[in-house]
Length: 288
Ligand code: ATP
Ligand code: MG
Image 1 (tube, rainbow, N blue to C red):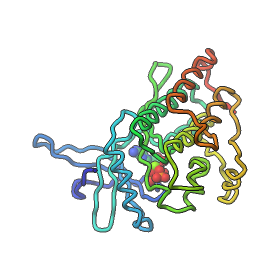
Image 2: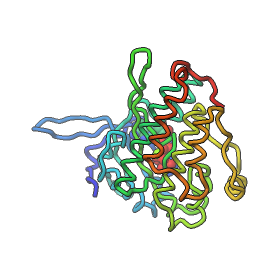
Image 3: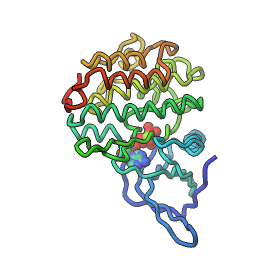
Image 4: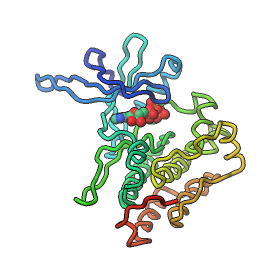
């Protein structure tokens, strides 16, 4: 359930590097609208040859994104198949991935900005929960920044959740291990049993990233050490802000049934905002 886009209508411009299973390009798409040619900036994801057997899951990701529409969900235009290449065509988001953005800003991002982003993500989470849809790959890397926002002139950031890509259900265990601590623990144990609670876990990890300057959690651990982390039911280092730590901890409960609903998450985020009135005023260098 996605549009097929003719390869002739696409132009690949600069390379933006690689994704997990993709090569990524900025490019443009030509449409004829009311007799006139129109060019739109797009982002193109070309599926790697070595993951070609996962094309169904790649198409499914595109299909999922095309079927649902929300202001904080990335727009996917469709798929283009050219010879043996599968290309996902999506909206180009100006400021790129949130983790890179936060790292570049090195702690100069106000708490209120981070809370805005967190609330926007919670809002999509709520939308997905109502539709009973599992995203399955929520992370700061998959949040794209459409507007920077500047608190000094009263504008907020604006994020869009990207497509989930190939599902860990088909990539095998290595990829799942690599996705610790974003992937919910139950996904590793029994991939067939996971439900919407797994997005709550990933939300917790993403919240942790947002308040930790976009640094990757558990960096430097090898897959075996990452697995041990889950087997021992360990938790990421807690932020000093206890109300925030509590929310992250509740999302990252090892028992999926104990994780909050998206409504509960929104409620707790709203109470975070009022838990320290002075907080939104200062830029925190280090909330840990
Ligand atoms: P995964 O399935 O693991 O998410 P991927 O193929 O989606 O992998 P990413 O690693 O998520 O690839 O993205 C690679 C980089 O491409 C990001 O860090 C970001 O800078 C850039 N990028 C991805 N999507 C967009 C987009 N729609 N607009 C602008 N930049 C993007
Ligand atoms: Mg991605």
